[in-house]
Each structure stands twice: as C-alpha cells, then as structure tokens.
Length: 130
Image (cartoon, rainbow, N blue to C red; front, side, top):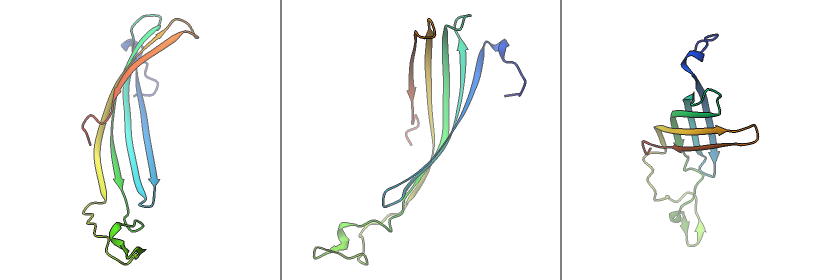
C-alpha cells in the first residue's frame, strides 16, 4: 500500500493483517509459534455498498517443538515405583517441526440497514496439509 494513495478507482479495498501467536503447554512444554499474513480484497457488488464480497489468503509459517525431559514413560516404572534415571525406552529423533501453511476464504456481506444485515462465508485452512 502507498500512504496517501486513493484506491477509489478500483472500486474496492485491499486488506492486510498479521497473526502472531506463541503458546506453551503441558509438562513437555509443547510450544507453538506462528506467523501468518492475511492478504485480502473487499469488492463492492452494489454502488450503495449494501452488498460486498471479500476474498482473502493467509500464508504463514509455524513451528512446533517439545521437551521430553519432564515427561515420564511406562519403562521408567520399575516394580510399581517411578525411577526417573531408568531409560524411557522412547527414541525421539525430531522434537521440532517447522512448516509452511496456507488458508483462504470468501465472505458475502448483505446490509439492509444498520440493524438488519447478514454475512455468509466459507474458509479453508491447512490447504497443504502440514
């Protein structure tokens, strides 16, 4: 976008958004970090703006990782007692995973008045099945 530039000649408006998410959960410290950009366009269907359609795409990158040091496993219970020094018997070759993700959506907006309106839309996430 160009500051001060009018987009009225294209009879619609570009939209931009940013999603930043970081979450840490459980004993394994399962961490999810996400960075997504939302890029869309809102188009007037009628001159009075009583009907609009919006299309958007949301590409991004995600990382998930965890730490096994605070977890306990069946093999660490010896004679019904937990023994943290016992081998877990588990082999975690990868505790971190980073992937590209993409979603898209469309919304139809109808407005009769400030109190009477409807939005109908559909969206699809994880189109590339990360």
